[in-house]
Image (tube, rainbow, N blue to C red; front, side, top):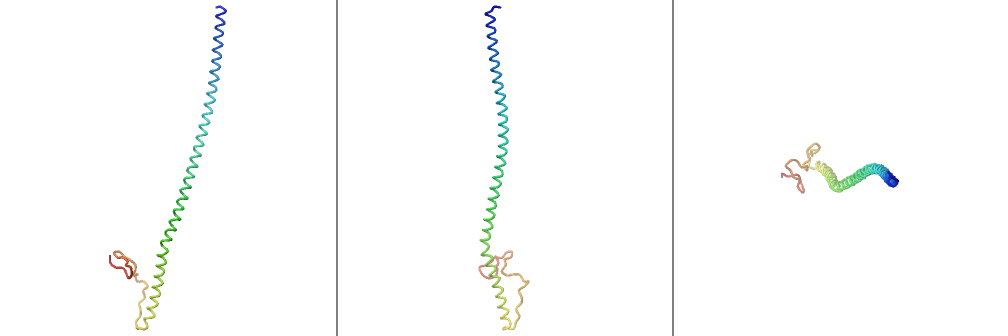
Length: 141
């Protein structure tokens, strides 16, 4: 071989070595990048899990608060609608007591005893097939 061919061959070998070193540097960089991406993916997975837990907790808290508010509103509505009815029932009970007392005072005048109403069915309560009228005892439907 001649010197020119040797120089050309050494030049080509030198170029190939530089290219191989550059390729190895690029491959090392890619491996480092791949490792960093794997760590980033793992961090993102952990953050997603934490976020899912936070979302579940927030939804559970919101639903619990909403249900508590709905329960409070329901209780208030039932109380509001039943108070007039309860006051009417209390009034009827007081009137019945007054009526019984009035009947007991009338009894000696007529000379007859008034039978006690205790233990007897209430004629104002509706049973099967009966409807409550606007006044007076129930009537047949």
